[in-house]
Length: 196
Image 1: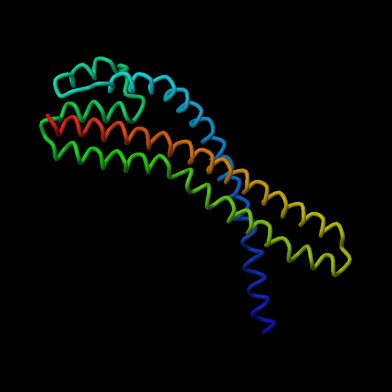
Image 2: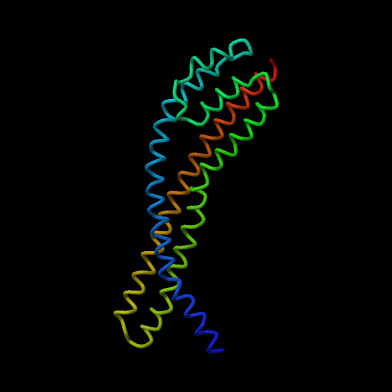
């Protein structure tokens, strides 16, 4: 039984460095996500009013006017899909496929946020529990310095994992609202196209 315990101890101790390295990478990725999220927020804030205005009182006869009311650049996903749907309006099956494609693209954009929500706490917990073994062994042998160093690593990994997870959670919630509004707009446009 002691051999099995030793093997498990070596495995868990050997995982500490990879867990910390991955946690640092996840944290850096979360910081980069904040930057891209802020840029995306500014862009969506500018263009959402244009999209709303362009789709107000749209009919089958005024579909070409929608494109003229939209911003010239396709820097927001929904604008690119509105243009595609209007250009393919005579192919109803293609319009439906574009709706499904938009949902897939939106889910891809949410992928990093979802990963951070799940991976941050997992890595933080692993980074907390792995150094606890050596910390308790240091306490038992009276090596307070070793215990303090291991406890410092344990708390630091927990905080880092939770911060990465919080960033992922907030960005996921906001982006889901954005994409829900976009899907509503695209479904409305799809209905207008299908009734033409």
